[in-house]
Length: 312
Image 1 (tube, rainbow, N blue to C red):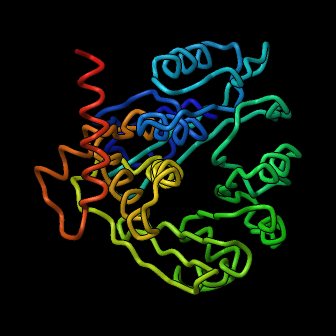
Image 2: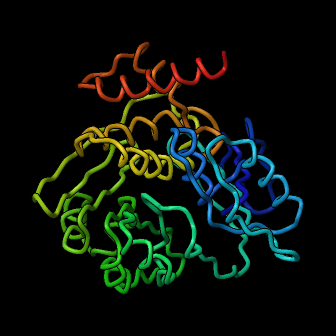
Image 3: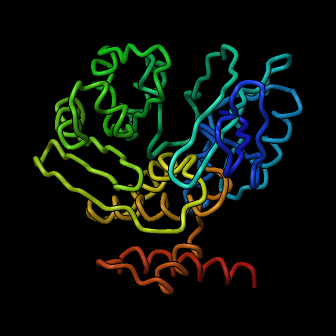
């Protein structure tokens, strides 16, 4: 998990120069993007991660504590350890990052922990032992990766996917690891290793390959006035994982994830901008995007109504 410091509307400065941003925010990032996004969609979510006892860690922990449905029981606070921090220089359609991260510590999910419907893990490294344990108990394991700063894009990743049910890289990551030259080919190739491969493509939406049925589905992104794409992929993953609790068809789940990701880019920060059911209901009512949104609209309206009743 990271502390994300996001600057908007600013180019990377040339050496010896200074540039000024249009806006900035400080927000939880990394794993927290997915955890906050899932919790805001009503999924009871546990965050297995680590923060230091430094001022940035204290601030991020305080922000997370204010999120409903987010259980911080398994958030480790480590004395003397610097919380990871990322500075994001972002525009409407792309961003660049500068990150500082010290080696972290092994984190575990306890044997007596709550039943887990789905979990997200980093497939770029060997999976911790607890992942196989919860998967054997029926947990859906969703894998992801990050940017490989070494440039090796090791094929060892494909071997690790045997312990993953759903794999969701972005288009660059997918093509690098499969040595293909387009996201559709990459999704098909990854489908040889997992039940479901989903490749996110930013403003081009997502492409998914269901290896069981041999079905390929392309889902377009929803057009919005974009401010900051940081964390949009994380929001997609969280929304898709939250939708696993429904009986929706795959196409509807992909559309739901794409909508939530699109709504998240309208303001700064990934976790900070993740939508809630009222945001979804309001957008669908006001904008009426093309396609069949009836299942998603009914879902969002029902949860918005429940929230209002609780507040009353």
